[in-house]
Every structure is written in structure tokens, then in C-alpha cells.
Image (cartoon, rainbow, N blue to C red; front, side):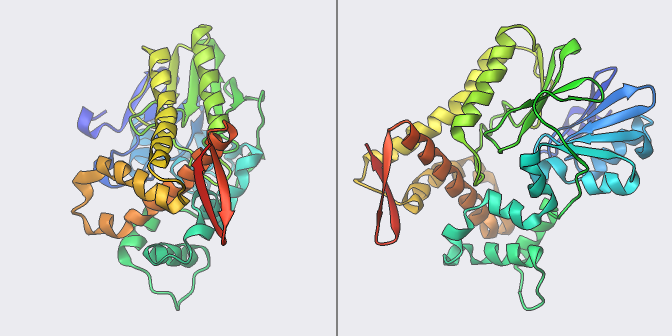
Length: 356
């Protein structure tokens, strides 16, 4: 294992290896924490094969694990940063079996549906600032030699590595997977996200209930702020009941085995902070469109990335983050409408939002 700055993997215990996601400084945003789980002497499963290729190969080599011994791939949800090495593993071992919740399957197996899940394409397709982004989506989902691709978008999309991949089996809440992992359906971040619970060790692989500084994200078309809140609360309950003593999450530094209740509350609070921000913005005007609201919230969001703003690639592709922010804002507005704090009004083919 290498030093902290270049750490590739950590051993959580004798049966679990954590492959660390790449840092933001690497500009590879399409990775997550992956976990290698020993099932028996020479049989393994991988949870969320979303590490970088380099880290995956080095972890397996340094732990004397052959590809043919990775028998199962458990996908907690269908985001590309959690599945990007799936097809590579399938090529190395065609006998490996992959699993995902049925509500997530199409996002892995159909690249078009994946982009439709994540971004408000119908809202942005006619806006000039998103034109290069829309062109890139068309290029990668329906390759067309007549399309000219901005090279910085090509770099981003190549890193995303979104493609149609094959999933072998579906799983549901309550299933027990090889290795004794109990499936807990935890929607919100995506419709079919699942956590995996190792009861005998009181370990929960909590996927994108991750507790990192990035906070909770609900940026998909079928995502739900309300359901995400319930899923986070469920983890809190498991911690309070003493049945979970360690979280192994999809992002951030792991393992997490101290101050779990407090950190889960902090993660939950990132949702309520966004709700408060939107309500505060709406107080300043009688009514606003989703574009107006996003202009205001995105100004706050972008402050987190000031050290990258000098990069040409960042300046060209920042509209991707803005489109994601717009989708997230829409989900938060739906939740605030459910809570009877905002209402919408359709006028002249435009939708306006206002305080109740």
C-alpha cells in the first residue's frame, strides 16, 4: 500500500478491501469507493466497480486476486461512477454475475436513458449555452459523423465512460446475496439505490448516503428528496439501534466508525439547507422560473470549485454542472410543493414557482 496521498487501497478487515476513489485533483470525477469482499478462500465479490482502471488492477495484483476469482459484482445503483469498470471485469471473467435493483437496470443497459435520468434535457435543449453539451450527448448515444465535438467535452465524456452494459440479475429488498449481504432498498438518490448490510459484522455498505463534504444529491429525473430523507433516517435508526457500527460508503474517506449519528445528521442537513436556500431566493421575487432559481443557487455552488476555474476544460464544461443543478432544484421544488411551502403556476408555456 502506498502513502496517504497516493493511497490505492486499504484493508478494512481480513475480508474487505477498500479501493479508494480518485481525488478531485486528478480531474477524474467518474470514480467511487469500490470494495472487494472475500466470500471464501478463493472467491470474491466486488461492490460498485467504479474505481479507476489503474487502482483496480494494482489492488488485485498486490492482493494476489485473479479476475476469474471475482464471481459477483453488486451494483448499488446505476450511476456511471459506480459501474464504469463493469464491462472490463466482464471481459476478464465472462462467468462473473452482476446484480442490480430492477429500477436501475435500464440506466446501466441503455446509455440514452442514463442521460435522460440525470439531466433536464427537455428544459435545456434549445438554450445556446448548453448546445455543446447536447451535441456531445447525441454524439455518444447516436454517433453521427456530421456532428463536431468540442474537445473538452470529449475529454469529459471519455472519462464518464457511459455506455450500454449488461446486467445479469436483479435484486430486491430483503434478498441475501452471496457473502451474507442483505439488500436494503434505499431510494431517493436514485429510484432503485440499495444498501448492503453485513449483519454479523454490523457493517453497512451505504452507497451514496456517503457523508462526504459534497452532501446529498438528488439530481435525477426520477429521484425523490422525500424518499432520500427516509433512507437517511433509516440508517440513523440502524445506528441508534446498535445494529450498524461501521459505514462503508461510495464517496469520501472510509471506513466511518465514529460519531455516526452526528455525521448522518450533518449529511441530512445538506438537504434542508438546500430547501432553505431555495425558499430564501423565492422570498426576493414574487415568482421565478426554474432557470431563475438555478442562476441564483448555482452562483453559490460554483464557489466550491474556484481553484479549477482557470482551466479551459472547466470553463467549457461548467454548463454540465449547471444542468445537473437545475435537475436537482426541480426535485427540491417538488418536495417543497409536497410540504406546501411553494406552489407552481403555468403561464404562457412557462412554469413559475412562488411561495405559498
